[in-house]
Image 1 (cartoon, one colour):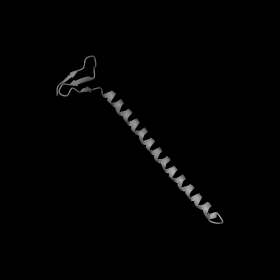
Image 2 (tube, one colour):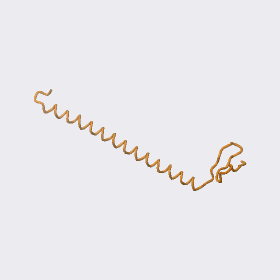
Image 3 (cartoon, one colour):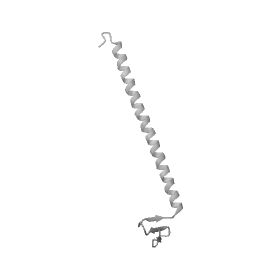
Image 4 (spheres, helix red, strand yellow):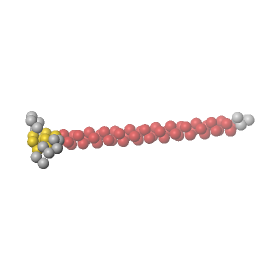
Amino acid sequence: MPYVQVESHKHLYRDLDSGAILNTDIEELKAYYAQVEIKNKEMEEKLKLENKVNKLEDDIGEIKMLLHSLIEMRKPDGN
């Protein structure tokens, strides 16, 4: 796999077989992985919060249904 440095870009090389541009800057790669990790954690936290909200909505719906049932049972004529 022959590589040629891209003009005026110290860390960029072109793979002559595939035409791909490769970045050899390790610090930039580490920074990218750190950003990906942060985004993944944010997405995970968002999903957890969405699941909690959905659970709370379900619980509230169940409580409302039980309250309606109690009210119906307390009515003198059952209606």
